[in-house]
Image 1: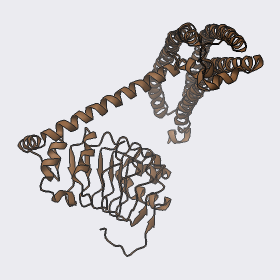
Image 2: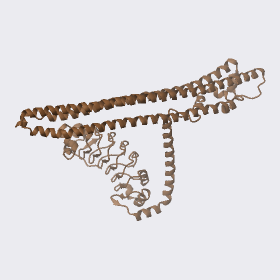
Image 3: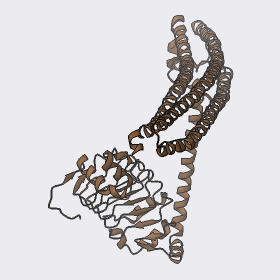
Image 4: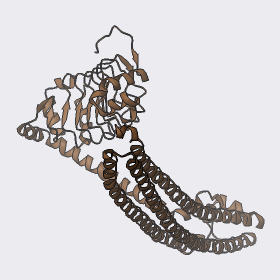
Length: 523
């Protein structure tokens, strides 16, 4: 399908990319930088690599800011190597040898995609392209008209090209696409008129209504699943996920073979369901609700802290800007005064005075930064104390509630053991009227066997409770530690960046002064 080239297939190496950026550079700011300071691939916004006889897409990972990529008229066989181009808006892969749509999963900002004149037979694997507006698939091998329905999910799609495909030869081609893609404006480079859309809708109304019904059901299910995922994430953030129901209680019996057998004993079912389970679940719900409330308190504390930090930084920056603005007013006058002065002694005096002004500005800006550091240190220390207290209180109360769960389990264990011993005595005396399943009766060989079975069940339950408590405590403490570490590291980085900015600014001003040599001025 593609043209043949006399030259050998080429590799997308650094040499090709540097040459392409350099040739296109003069028209772009990135190109000017490339000529002056060397290639900065990360700053390039547009890249043209057409007619290069490229066989494979490669080495584009550095172009992290790229928005437009032109790879048409090559011999590319597979869409790959585009994973890091997440800012890409426009992609041209027309006139290649591509057989399948793939490798586009990270291009969430792509709006215009051309795959014209390739060997594609199926429209798929475009799900991530939620912003897609223009899709060119003309001159390919697409033969199934129903495949077009896949494009209904792209709500922003307004332009579609499928001419030159077997599907375009179908007598119902245009009507079908108008009906199933009602928001489409242009098909095969021609505007779709409203009359055509009305006719198409009438012709395919029954099928469209049925499809919409199915889509609505799917959408409702997806929204429900998304809501559940978001809710679960909220619960995880509060460290109390799956404590708002019977999950922990049920998990105690999932691996408890002996406990499942013992639940068939007379009287145990009622004890388990109405005495033990109900009370256990209520305690879990108390932990869950308490956890959500504490999460809100932690969030409010963090939000308040971040707001205080930002206010302090902003206020400090405003003071710094005023100092710099005042200095720069004087700065221009001082430089002009030095340039206009003809007496050497006066020039030297003015330079000394101006140097003192620069030093004073440096000291003022550094003093402001020191004041901000002290203010933020105090704010951070206060937040640290508050958040540690909140986490400590949360852990203490959760452990108290978990202890209630253990008390319930211990009480249930005693009752279960009492029932089991009574049944054993009845069996030994031949007074057992109820029939027991064979696997349950096998536990009543002797007292040691039944006591061990009840004890094994009890140990499993306690272990499940302990593990859930340990998990919660470990996670909330880890969250607190990592949060505080990040806050301290962020402040260190902010301070270093600010000091660097001050030094760079002062060095720049000083260099301007240093460039005024007395000899040149006198000339």
